[in-house]
Image (cartoon, rainbow, N blue to C red):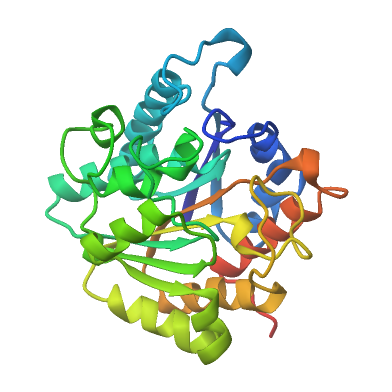
Length: 300
């Protein structure tokens, strides 16, 4: 497989600093070299340049650093679309989860031009379904999935074009355990498929990920967006917004191994690695292992 790696050192969408160093941490963990050892061709396209918060002003407390996030997301959208058009595989490493606005916009633009249906598997402790009307913080990393489904501020929903990027019926959330009330309302109104940690506890990961992928069987382009905070902090302490009670080591790997066996993943992003909160790059090392599992690394 020809894998194009794009780093997006963004922390403007988050409530604390540090995830802008995520792409560097993943490269230090050897993500490109380890994928090459699995037999893939790797093209590292470097990082999108992000202007730091010290050089900007917050003009809207409900949409913090909006203009720079929109600018960077638009650049990312164009790059992702070009990679798909060249028959490549986009691997996006972040950075906070606001970058998914650009990733999904690029995927959606490709799908519109080629009459394809986009699906999104969203692995995350949070729903990321807030808007400027519901957000308790104003942090845009809590809004990318809503924006991608056409809900929220026009500046975000129109990145890559003024159209809904993904049908809510073709979105599945896994490992959710922390939702705001506004997000719950959006899930109900939009009909988004969701599997919480309670579902995983009751039925087991193999059953849940199997159900999730079956719900996405009719899509032509499958995007996987993995927020490392889906994993329990005991396994991955260096994440943007840690929440206790997450996926354990094997559950996280089983998701990625099952996706690999499914054979239909078209793009992948890994976000919210925060080296400032980490221990000796433990979380980036683990994220790199997850990426390897999604690209074919097996126990036997």
